[in-house]
Length: 148
Image (cartoon, rainbow, N blue to C red; front, side, top):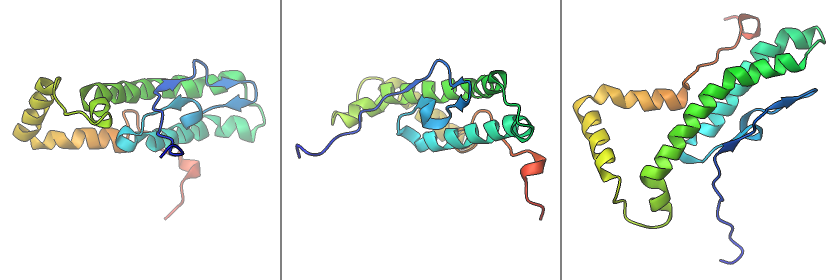
């Protein structure tokens, strides 16, 4: 067991995702907890946003640092929202669970959330939508879509 390395969970992000000739997106720009499996969704959304914003400048061979900054400006808010949700999930339950402890303390908030979801089951789709689609959905531009 000494050879087994446990995952060191960090939730952080670069202050600046770009420099001349380089744009970091996904895990390179913002480290996520594996909680909820949202890291890959955020990375794909980053890629779609980057492709949409940079397609024309790339085609015209005129990408500037300002173009790269626009990508970060668009994606920083969703990143902060998701990371805040992950931090809350860790504080509410995950840290205690991963440490092998019973989930007590903070139980009042969990209890309230479970009651609300029981009373209004339609709300259970909200977290699923937020995880699957994101808080700022990205869509490929028309020129990048296949015709059917």
